[in-house]
Image (cartoon, rainbow, N blue to C red; front, side, top):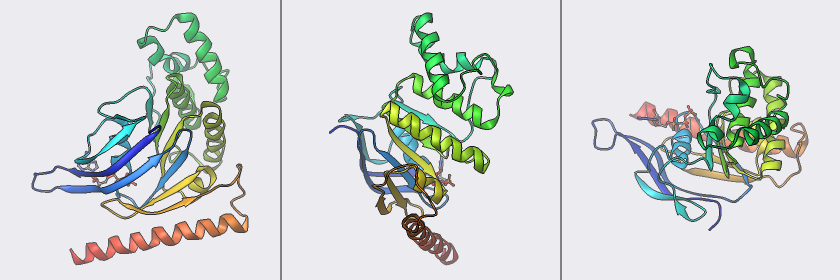
Length: 260
Ligand SMILES: Nc1ncnc2c1ncn2[C@@H]1O[C@H](COP(=O)(O)OP(=O)(O)OP(=O)(O)O)[C@@H](O)[C@H]1O
């Protein structure tokens, strides 16, 4: 099968230790090529744990994860992971950060230069290639991190709250950039967020998690054109549904804590 296939995956941190933590439980999720899936869930419900497994940085305790039919056992350039804080190399220019992976791959300098020009333009940093990361704003750094991920032509972009550290206006612009990038790259995206608005603005499908251990509570398919007007009655209705689903889970987690 093409795309990402997560089958019956469970993750227990510290299994066999004195304090095992069941993070994800029997989770099954397929992400089609070029599909944009957003994971929404209460804090600590295992969203990042799942992303690390898909990235190949962690192994599931049980279950399988495949990409284009092949088991995921280790990180690969075809699956890029982008975090909340852009982790650029401070001693390299933006351009050299973007083409770092290509240099490791022994891509010829002329090709690297061409790729950097194209990617920096795509993320709106056409004039910032020679700057160092500390000279950029948070939003610009995150765009540089996106360009660096794109340089490896990933088939899947795994994004862990990529815009959470940004102010609301920058965040909205970054979402627009991401949609442009997604449309031109045709990569699948699996993005974790706490923001219902972000999920509604971006997703083809929102997957709502239960509280820990994370399971799929609901899936909401948004077969709607973008950009979306989040104030339209239809979107307000979707937002209410998401809020109600999340509220149930937060409530359940509190009750379980009280009983423990
Ligand atoms: N490396 C680890 N070792 C032990 N426990 C871990 C590890 N990583 C995560 N956990 C635990 O697994 C559970 C799920 O964490 P995870 O970070 O996957 O949740 P999350 O849904 O991404 O949370 P948030 O939304 O707050 O970022 C938490 O209880 C967390 O403490």
